[in-house]
Length: 133
Image (cartoon, rainbow, N blue to C red; front, side, top):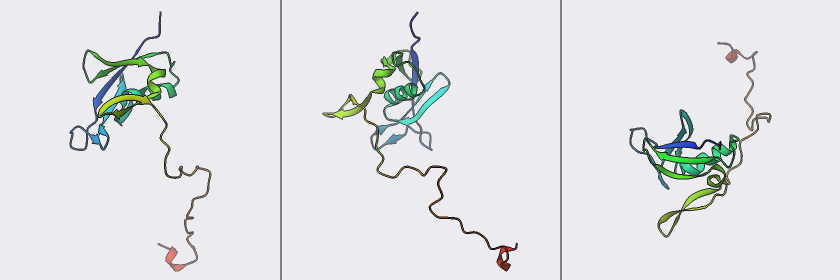
């Protein structure tokens, strides 16, 4: 018996007013496997969900099948390992799969928990008359 395929269901993300949500790059989607929400507000839910599943330790050879909302027909299918290596880009005005590259942030990474804060909090002088309530 082979590995059971992952059934990924995608639905349009909603904005605060309940309408379909969009980013500057296109419509946003939420993705779930059963009752578990894998991601929200993604423009490439199939590929992003595959990377999430891979990071969770799923076998890269596991088949992943995407269904749009409650549709009975599969929209996309691949293996988790292959889909995780892809993203969707525009080519001649049409969407196309291309090699995924991790996003490199242009800002500094967050401070580690064990480092001192950049701006120390001032200590209250308890002998001062202003310190008492």
